Image 1 (spheres, rainbow, N blue to C red):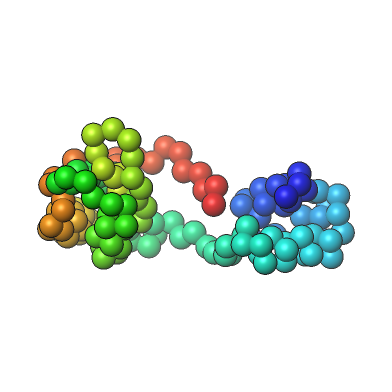
Image 2: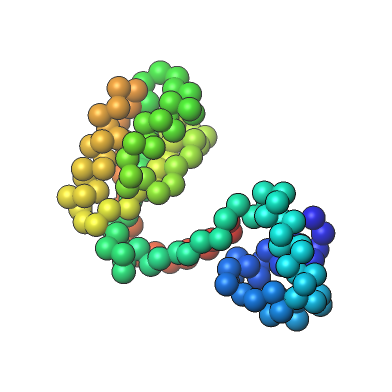
Length: 145
């Protein structure tokens, strides 16, 4: 990947529906050259998909929390993935350093929905306890993927 590829990716992150000609006029390439580069980025799996982002508040999923997940003993990341994949309200999760085993981002329609999702996570045999922080207002949200 060169600087032109990075510039094309930056523009597609801002607007995945941008036309090749519009992108080309910014980066100094023809529309067909941009298309060839985008096709190559897709073939090389640099670009994994083109998607939309729906405002969670409009979609009815405006209640969110960040949850620290603490497990009993040592739990492999694959096991955490299995546990969390079964909870559709989990929108993001990762293993972390520190005393928690994982950090989980949950979105639900309301507080009872959030509580039900947390209960699903807590019922997993390897989960000892969780510590939650409910989001009051979102200040910054950047999508880099």
